[in-house]
Amino acid sequence: MPDQEEPGTRRAVDDRERRRRRAQFLRELNEARALRERVQPRRARAARMRQAMRMRTFRW
Image (cartoon, rainbow, N blue to C red; front, top):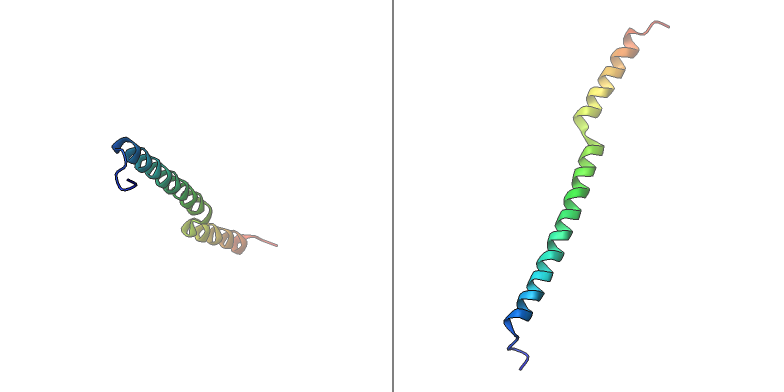
């Protein structure tokens, strides 16, 4: 009967599914980390402020 699977088969399928979900999660986590490194709004704002200060003190 299809309802009665062997316990080992079910465990292998569950394990494979768990590994697939874990791999997907880790991929998304790495992508989020990379995005955060690229964006970093506070550092970008601080860099703009430093540049503005340099331009204000620059003598033409």
